[in-house]
Image 1 (cartoon, rainbow, N blue to C red):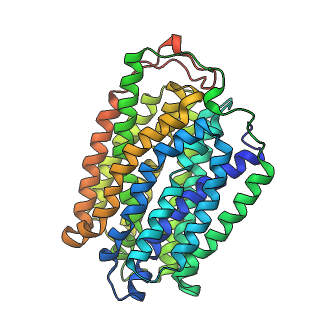
Image 2: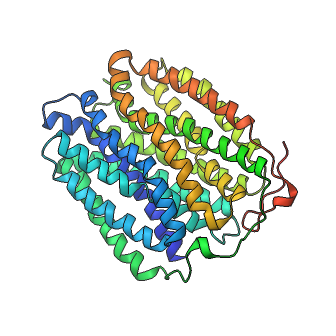
Image 3: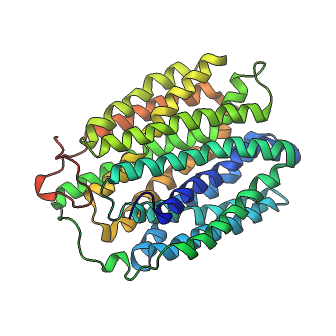
Length: 399
């Protein structure tokens, strides 16, 4: 499958849409809270169901992707995102909102264990394909900031959910029209790469899951908290919500370019050699940002988001390198269910933590988590020569 094909284009759009939907609420939460006479910190816990299901739903989604078909599951993804987005737009109270957000999380869980394995199957440069896909996902995060800010300011928070919902339904129709039907489910295809020794596979899967948990915690804390973080630290400098949204979108857009660089490096060098410095660099940047203010803070947010986004492709690259295509969706589903399920606590704790201790404490906690990620990455096993993958032609990994 070519990265320039209509299928790859729609899969990349799907990744952008997945992250856009998950972060509309974080950008619009202040407007929703004001509309309902609440403070945003008290409203944030109602979105925990969305992020919990984003993780837990990955397990059945991955299984269905391998055993039923990835094309069919992607159609369900687009349709589900559209319908749930419209339900959120019509919410009349906090529990209506919570249920609709949770339903959105169920459908959002489909993309990562299904869309990414579908994208890299047969790819000659899987690292670069993952990098481009990661860029698309992070542009979705940027779009969530700027599009939601614009729609909230001029049309109200409900339209911030309704407009992307309609776009998702259009994508569902396009996917049905242009993506070829699968002749056989992935689980029934011939093996495409050599089988790894059980000990190496177990160690790789354990580290894959641990790094996924810690990096997902950081991802959720930053992407869900950056909007309010900038609003607090830039107060008196920039107070317009649309301008703040544009500034945050600029951060995400620039930081997203790190995905392309990392994707190219993954195809050429051992994963550990690239991932280790990217994880370690986050620690001092979070520490510096904890007490910064104004434009200095803004530059530090840009810097740490470059490394946060730069770390995203690695777990997917590990799956491509260590797992045969026949079961990638299932393996991805297992690790995502654990990682995203546990990291959903970041969304639940974000509001109460900031309310009780402030953003400085949150940044210090993220520095600790980044340090833990660095330790996990240092334990990543090398890849034996006998396990060379036909779909992942990276060089042999040392130590």
